[in-house]
Length: 335
Image (cartoon, rainbow, N blue to C red):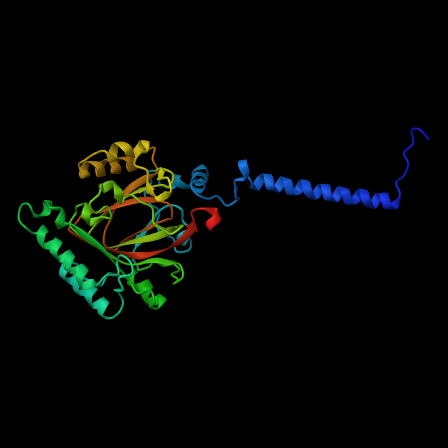
């Protein structure tokens, strides 16, 4: 009869139900896919990657804690989950002396008892006595009256990597890992000491290049790195920038893009002192999340992964030590 709805059979009801379930499943899958896949099929994972994670931290106000209010203290419970730098007092005092002769004797004795690597497999593992000799030569040139300290050869720096086959407790003590730092063989990246002589660019990682090339992010392979810098001998000046304050070089996100608006003018300066002072001034600007700290003996600075930093010595002899460990992968597809 017209105007009346006929009741479907049991078989038709089952078919209709199956079709409805299938439709809901397809729509649900499509909705999830649209959330996880961006334009042209590019993955946009819920866990942000690349520079996007840093922009998200900025949006959430993570970096505002350093806005002219000093650096927060290291919290052993918070540990390496902290996303802004932390400062503290070293757990174990440096035992290697305070003069170049004392430091050299300490390094040689550590090598003789198998603590320092000498396998030549990577920088920082060459024969210790050869590296100490190079440092001693730079120190001698720097002592020449009037003009010795002006020569590039009067500056030198070198790292001395520890043998990571040692027990974890011993390694933690040797690099003065802060309380709450979970040192593990599998994730430890840099365990060792960095010694510098003089105050020129060769006493930094820039070597013969522009002093601005000391600006970097700590990195290993495809992973960012969390690091601790322990002051042992002498003072180091550290310039720090939040991860999103410096534009990274394309294809090399651990290095800055010197053609970027903020760095182009500084990079063009020929006098390294002027360039360095310009970088300090940039880090101190009220509209920049960054800062400058003089790291003294007995103090440590925790540098979270992704943070830009540049170091140069303030004294003719400096020694830094400390642990570093793998952080997250920069790109999500490499996690």
